[in-house]
Amino acid sequence: KFAEDYITKPFSIRELVTRVSRVLRRIEQFSDDLSPLTQIDEQLCVDFTKRLLIAGENNIILTPTESELLYVLVRNLGRVVTIEFLSRRVWPLEAVDKHKLQVSMYRLRQKIKQVSDFDYIVSERGVGYRLVTGATQ
Image 1 (cartoon, rainbow, N blue to C red):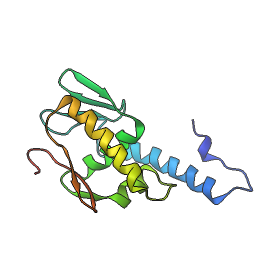
Image 2: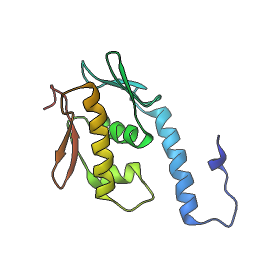
Image 3: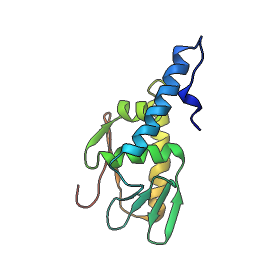
């Protein structure tokens, strides 16, 4: 479980960065101000622990990538989150790939559409994405 706490010499910088990123992510999960079950609005909530999108009786399973994207958007509700920030948060060791982000965001939107007609994720062309509710538009 805590194998990334120990690293032997010699090690590559890439391996060190990967392990430190994992530890920081684990720490952040325990110290975060969002509860595992987060209400987005009256219609929609997310269980980040189980990676579930919940609307009434409907539960949609999110992939780890979709869950991470939604997590970042929920933390920044109503604010634009840049393409670069989202990419670095979800894929920290990879170069920014706008197409990969667009595809992942498309899939997340499709899952949200399975449980709601409201467009929660707004594209800010060339800049990033914003999560909105009826109250934050």
